[in-house]
Structures are given as C-alpha cells and as structure tokens.
Length: 175
Image 1: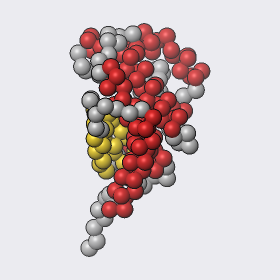
Image 2: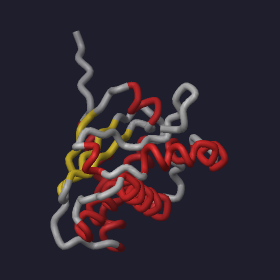
Image 3: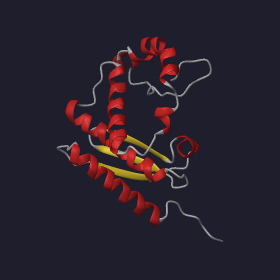
Image 4: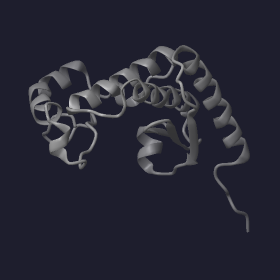
C-alpha cells in the first residue's frame, strides 16, 4: 500500500525558494535590525485552500513569521510570496513601535500597511480577502463598524478579541 506524504521534498524546496526571494526583496527595501525567523508548515484546512489560495501567514512579536501552505491550489506560489511580504511588514512595524495598540483601529492600520506593501511588491497577486467587498459595501456598514469594532480600547477587550475580518455575516456588517 502506498502512502502520500505532504508536503513533498519538492514542495518544501519550491516554497523555501519563493519565501527567500520575497523576503530578500522586502528586506532590501525595509531592513530590520534583527534577524527574522520564518517557520514553514503544511496546512489542509478547507478555509486555507478554498479562501486563502492555499497560504496563510502570521507574524509573532518580535521577529517570527509563520507560513502555512498547501500546494493543491493554482495560485499558491503567488500567495506565498505575498504572505511573506505582508507578514514581514508586521515584523518591520513591530520593530518601529512595538506591538502595542491602544485602540483596535491601530491594529487595522497595521494590517493596511502590511497589505499595501504586499500589493506594491507582489502586484500580480490579487488577494481574495482584499477584493471580496466593494468600497460601497463597506461604506454601508462603516459607522457601525467604526463605533462597535474600531473605536474600542484594547484594554477593555482584556486580550480576548478576534481580528476584524471582512467576511460578511448574515445581516451584519462585514466582520
């Protein structure tokens, strides 16, 4: 009986090369004073594959990037490069000001900075999460979103909060 082990050696080598090239490009433009660790792991969640083009990233304070990937999607190569740039932008931002936010809108501003940098350096990749809702759709719910999600002091959330995602719920504003 055969066994299918994922990721394959080729998957890891390809991912490593893509990560290194994206990292080198962003680090040249936005150098940090510390070494950055990039951790790579395989993911098989449906959300990762169906909604994120097979790649998700997370930056951990102060200088660690986690990249989860799956090569079964068509666009995973562009997605992994864009995710590296996006997460690196967080690491760079942490180095500039730490990871302290008084208000939730400051967190959202950091996400905007990271996404803007990814769009500038990897323009061929059109991230699904940034085009899912039109400006008109977000504008319709902006006042409620701002008052109930963004103008909230972080200390009142006591560390128990979810990021503000733009995934439209039933009858709700994009959350």
